[in-house]
Each structure stands twice: as structure tokens, then as C-alpha cells.
Image 1 (cartoon, rainbow, N blue to C red):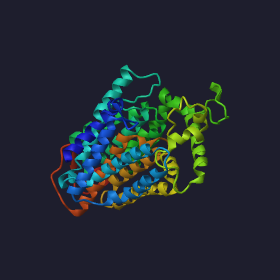
Image 2: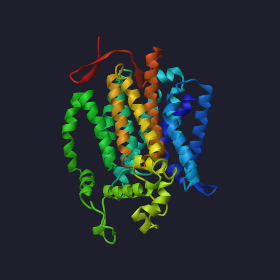
Image 3: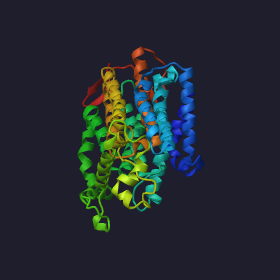
Image 4: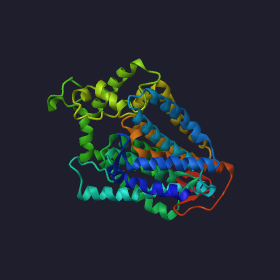
Length: 427
């Protein structure tokens, strides 16, 4: 079972476009090959729950939100879409639960963290080739992903895994892997920049700043050089875009009426809040945002050809509130609150690892503000797996069990102390 999970995590990031291209119709629903994989994941997770004993923490964390989401399908205008969305959410919960159910040796060595690192090799290679030979007119790198934003957020999670392993006293890179991973992380950061995804830039900055301030102060030099990025056209153009089109005039008849992406989002969010005002507690139902946006969002309502299937919320919190109401949003936020409290509990035993995981969680919460995070299936699989793998490792460490380490990452019970801002083993 463990090697099957390892295989899925190692390869899922490389097949986004392939799965999206493999489409078929079932009962009027347009499905991709990824839907079949989702069903397989749910079946496999259910089998693991029945056959293995493990912590019920993952179930407690996700169950309230999943229950509210499932009930809301009853009044959704797109019930088939609601069922599909619920199954996708359940796969996220499944990947959060499975690391608690793997064999003890896998938990101890955090073996599945290797899969997340390995999964990035093909997307990074394709991304570099794309930059060199077949970059599209937008100038945004998307590699094996359908959209540049999905690629950027995925790389942000990979970067957090790297810096967690560079920081943690519970599990870390072997010396050989450590020498290779520093230049590799620089490539990852470079590709995040070239995706031109501003939210991912913010999340990446949070992760790097946390590492520089709390783990390795030599990285403060890197932070001091960040303002120089403004001389990169991909960066300067994306930032100056926010200075234009800051107000919606009510007409989009000419180029002068165009609004920037943030103003576009604000207009949509305001329209969504006004539309859901009559059902604030329970919302409009799961998967209702996109079809309803054709009515409440002025731009979609005026041009239903361009917005044929509606538009996503581009904010997971707004989407949760619109579709499942204040009750659902509270349950969704409690998922992250649970993560933060769980991370804080391990601060005494693994202070720098806890700090880096905390930065990753906060970075992920930040990108929830600006994109359709619920729709990025593979991204969610990696994020929730990463957090659960670390939690499962910490829980086992508290139990006092010990096993042999893996090759890429090694487990350690050695105490660490900061020396000149860096981590070195104490005598």
C-alpha cells in the first residue's frame, strides 16, 4: 500500500495535462481521467481505514466541513457538480489521512516526503525547457500543469518541503542530498518567479523569510537582494499591472475600460456577497458559484459567450462562504486552525521544523485568498500529504519508536542548537 501511495505522489504532478486531455461523458457530466483516479484514491483510502489502525485526527479535522458540504448539495443548482466537488474534497481528506495509516517504518523515516521531492523533477525539467524553447505569448511558465497558477502553488509546496527538511531535527536530508538540494531549490524559486503568479510570490517570500530569520540567517543576504527582481520584466510587468484599471466604470466597451485582475476579483466577490445575502448561514449549495456567477457577476452576465460555464470564485474563503454559508466557512477555517494548533504542539521537540511547517501552512492560507484552490486537485494532494506526513512523524517521535532511516532523508533524535543562524548538531 505504501509504495502505491509513493507512486501516485511521485507521478501525479507530471500528468495534469494528460488527464485533462482524456475526457469522457458520464450521465451528462464532462469528466477527465483524473476523475477515475479520484474514485480509486477514495476506495484505497477506505480500504486502509478498514485494515489499518491509526490516528483519528485527520477524520476529526475534515469531517465537519465535508458534512456541511455534502448537505448543501441538496439545494445546489448543480447537484451533479456538487457530488463531483464533494468527491474531490474527500480525496484531499484521504491524502491527509493516509500518512497516519502507513506502516510505522514509513512514518519514522517520513519516506513519503521523498515522493514529493521526486515528483518535482519532471515538472521542473519541462518548465526549464518551456522557458528555453516553447514559452507561450503570455510569457508565463506552466510546465506539466494546465495553468501557471497551479504550477506556481505546487512549486511553493515543494519549496516548503525542501526547507522543512533543511530545518527539522526530526527528519532531514542526508549530507549528500543536502548539497544537491540548495541549487535545486534556486531553480524552483526561479520557476515560481517565471509563472508570474503574484500570490505564489507572496507565499514563497513568507517561506524564505521564515527560513532566513529563524533558521539560517545567512539567507538574509538573499532577502536583501530581492528588490533587484523588479528589473526582471516578468516581475515588473506583473506589479505595474496592478496600478492600471483600479476602478470598474460599469462599461467594458474599450481597452480603457479594462480592469486589473485584483479589481476584477473584488468586483466578483462583492457581487457574490450581495447574491448570497439571503442565505448567509448555509449558502447556495456546493458547486453553485460558477453557474450562479452568470447571473450575479456583471461581466459574466453581460458576456455569457466568454463566460459560458461561469467563473470560479478565485478565493477559497469566498467560495466556501457562498456555497456552504457561514457554517461551512467556519468549518473550513477550523481545518487550518487545527493544523496551526497541531504544529504549535510540536514546537518544543522540533522548533525549526515546526516554524517552517507553520510558514508553509500560512503561505497556503494566503494563496487561498486569490485563486480557485479547491479546483487544483494535484496541488491539494501534495499539500495535505506533506502536512500529514510531518504530523505522523512527530506523533511517532513522541511515542519513542525508532527505525532505520531512508536514503534521501534521515531521521534523527540528535538535539540541535543554532550557531550563527545555522543548524548544527550538538555534541
